[in-house]
Image 1 (spheres, one colour):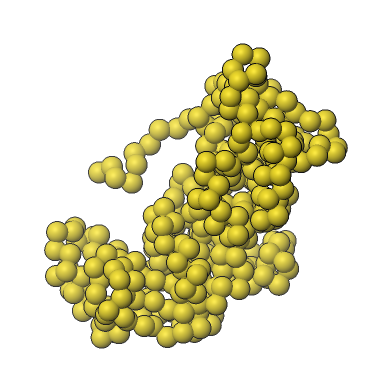
Image 2: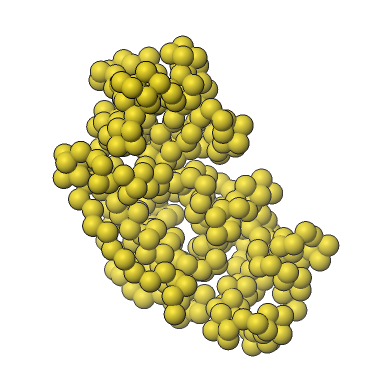
Length: 342
């Protein structure tokens, strides 16, 4: 069994289709050609050079290394890792179907393998940092082999997706072109910061952190006392002394499981009780798919923040946070060339 990383678009635009259709798609634009006819890597490379003749040679070579596996390397029984771009979670599936080319399909869904999604919405924070580095590879498709990844991920699956303390020996990626991939440094940094914050801020302290962020954004904040709060961890409002709008009811969850739909519905009920105009649901471990599907329906009433959103708010408002919070979360801004730099 091998483990393959798949991405559902740069911004997760194909993720819901992957999960709903129970498939992984190769989402290269206008790649309407049957890949099963190109068992020789050099032939598929030549075909891509003909189809995308405006691209650089190294770009085409990189694309070929990612396109080839869906038809010729991935096997039934292999596992798929699908990092979510819509929430701070990761989905896992098992390949159960052969490669299919559907010439009549809508672009870019010509190529797919059927997948049984056996574990969805697993919090990123459950995984060791080195595995997250592998999950953060820039490539859309690649084989994950570093640091005994297959054995460790299987053990996590057997252990309720909690990491076991095992001895591992770091080794280089397998001698496959599919695995030669750079890591998304920005994503890796956010994962590291996320784990650090989670260690220091849980429960009531996480509520305090969110309160500090809201204060830095200009809100007057009421923080319920520790213990029973009736579902309103925080209340925030604008205007003079907090008597203006918007009036926001906030719930904060820092436990290790994604938030489910009943929690979202509870927030809506509490908003009505306290006459809040809007709601903010903060879940450090992200949200189950049933909640993610409600983002559009709740857009004008409720916002959802996972750890990624909280970290972005910390970045944007860091200089306005209290000295105590900045001392507990010591950050340094580093500038570097983006992946577009040459």
